[in-house]
Length: 265
Image 1 (tube, rainbow, N blue to C red):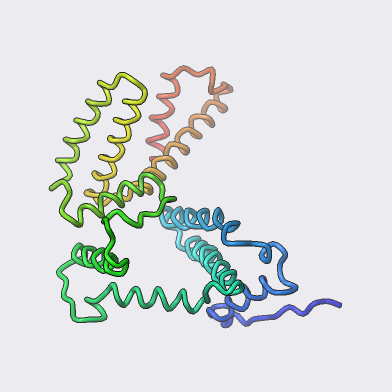
Image 2: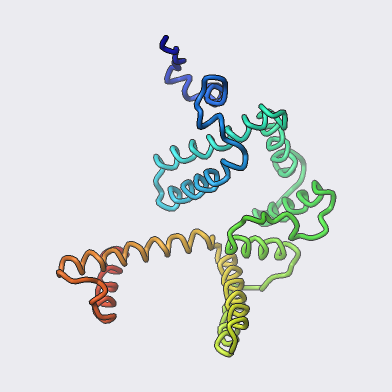
């Protein structure tokens, strides 16, 4: 006998409750075998992947794609919530209740009588309230996610300690520090010393980016994308010339690279 498939109107498909029912059906008896066997651990790589795909659409300024990718990210959140609900860990309502309560508590300038002058003061209040919620963190650096990419971690560290006044006064000071660190790298004699000094350079760059309001992970992703486009231009040009790219001289590749920069940006 053919199973009946629930049908939803276009209006219903735009409702949160419909999505919740779909996830419940996928995880329920007679649902999808793949969805039913997923766990919090098995879904981790998909959650990370979806986050990066969302970031890519933002950087590409592709709003239709962003709408789709946000849905995919939402799917991961709903699956985790459903798995937790099935095992009695917590319910979806707990997730919504926690984040709603947190937003109200951390925005006393909106939901209370606190006065703030600017966004920077909002950030300072946010960190102070967050510390109070953690029963007084021993350190401003407590709670940094272990899986956070290293560059993003560096910027988070800089932002946190800056809230306590431990920061450069202006970006130019950081550039001077960068020159100093490059000099130390040049003087490094052992591989261990070079690794140490190179790490210091990256940390200084992370703070320079923070002062310039540059999201370092995003900047590097965009630089990687530009490099890929330009190198593919070189590869295509070499094929059109009937040449193997490995047989080209560095000068020939540099010339094509300059062309790629003019053509592709």
